Amino acid sequence: MTNGLKSYEYHDTRSSRVLRVYASDAHVTDGSLALADASSVSWTADDARTLELARASLRSEATAILSQLERLDSRFCEAVALVERCRGAVVVTGMGKAGLIGRKVSATLSSTGSPSHFMHPGEAYHGDLGTLRSTDVVLAFSYSGETEEVKRLLGPLTSRNIPIIAIVSSAASALGRASTVALELGRIQEADALGLAPSSSAAAMLAVGDALALVASANRGFRSEDFARFHPGGALGRKLSRVRECMRPLGQCRIASERATIREVFVANRKPGRRTGAILLVDDSGRLSGIFTDSDLAKLFEGGCGPEAFDRAISEVMTRRPSWISCDALMSEAVAIIASRKISELPALDADGRPVGVLDVTDLVDFFPCAEESK
Image (spheres, rainbow, N blue to C red):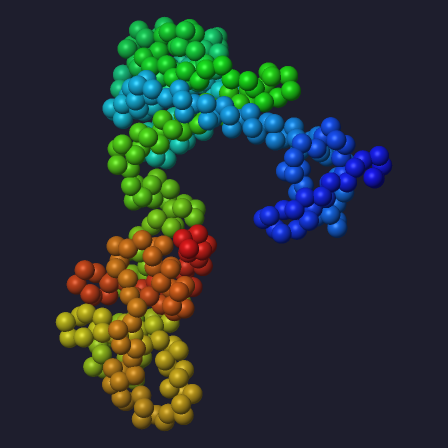
């Protein structure tokens, strides 16, 4: 006993540790409370209650999302078809918490091939309805379906024959009745102690909205190349970009005939600025036949060679059949090759095997997290 509390020990199968909590019988429901190392932390009854409330909140939101699995029907298919056929933008609207959910769903739509933007219902009623076109589709979020600011838009929208997809608790609501398609969430118990704050209902709205966007995207045949086009920045954009977009072009590379001597190659291939550490060597047809790196040059010096060694054909000391990659390959593939083979330069070739550029490891520092993610 500690301060009137009982000690409970549990075996954590994930960490193979014996864990202990201190709590009253009323607050210990199962071994899931045991998350702290017994040697460093002692929990109070308040700690146990806090964690149980957090679990109850997560269960409530998870239940709300899972309940939507059974509610999916032909109306969802109709809504997807409206998004797929949309030749304008999916204009998302909603007030308060529902509006914040709508903004996120709009972002999902835009990034997965369905042009979209958010329209605040209050601003829409005071002029922003002018942004709507006859080719647009409106996606409206309102759990009650009776949000006053959203209801004011229904007359102008229906008079212009703009399709409305509603995500609501009931199709019998004002928004549900006025919509082309109403996706019903059903009655949902909110996660907070008072059962009032939009939480579980908001989670369900977000899940259904994302499902609508992602299914429409899949049906359109949205590809990783399309995703890269919409995400040029950050880790995702880098991972999905093409080698030709990131390589040093041939004009910035050192390239020479395999027939030339080492001395001729270095004299003729002086480049200003920060040069790559490799010389690309080609045969008489211009195809890559080998590579000679700064490391290869260092090995010559370390071997005690004399000046006459530099008058040998570079083909005698070059690395034959070096690693290479197509200029149309994904950068994630290129980074994986550089990382796994521990090389510093990777030639990029066209379909005929001719060099078109080089990937230098010093240019690719930001790409290596992508390589780790791909493992």
